Image 1: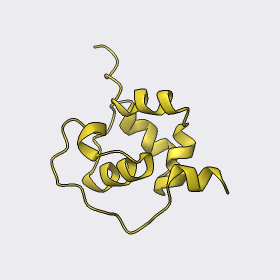
Image 2 (image 1 turned 135 degrees about the horizontal axis):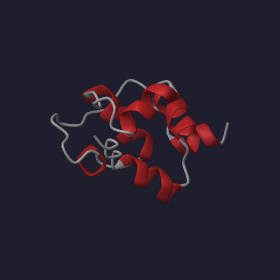
Image 3 (image 1 turned 45 degrees about the vertical axis):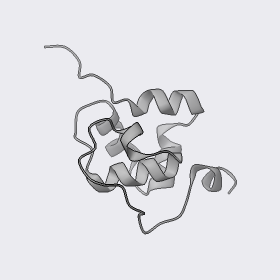
Image 4 (image 1 turned 45 degrees about the horizontal axis):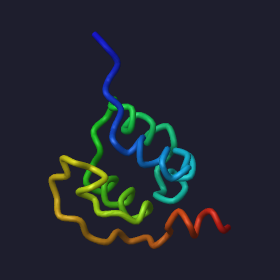
Length: 86
């Protein structure tokens, strides 16, 4: 049995020069949990999908091709740019 296929978010993070740690800080999730999701070991929850899309400033449907819920705003407002400037 081969390795799980990495999540498309891996490419987005690489293109933007964002680490999983940076995404973790922006979303409020632990880096280890995000790693498990982006490596395909765990599914992305609707809440995680929304937070990642907001943090990366892109539509949820583009970031998560199989998004099953309509995107809406999450209770936080930190973006990667805001986190990086701190």
